[in-house]
Length: 88
Image (tube, rainbow, N blue to C red; front, side, top):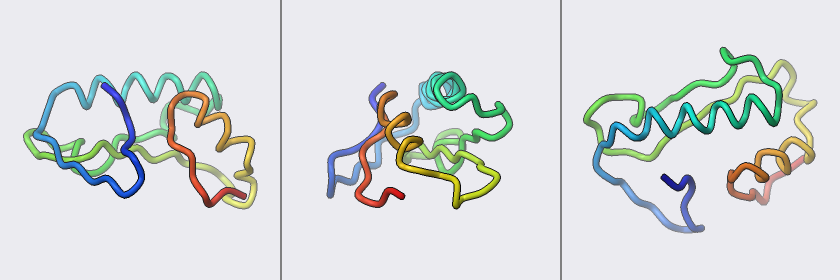
C-alpha cells in the first residue's frame, strides 16, 4: 500500500482491512526513525472506522511543538511521508 497523494489530488477509496496493517507498518517505521513511544502514534480519522471509505490518518504526539524542527520533517520524509512547504 502506498501512502500519500500527489499535490491537489483527492481520492476516497473504498474501505480495506489493509489500512490497519499499513498504519501498523508505518507506526513501526516512525518508532524506529523518531524513537517515539508507541502510545504517541495513533490511527485516526475515517480509516480507523471499519467499512468507511477514506484516506488513512496518522497523528504523532509531541511534548513541545516549538521543538519540532526541519530535521524531524526530513526524517519522516525518509520513510515515505510527503514533503511539506511548511517546515520550521
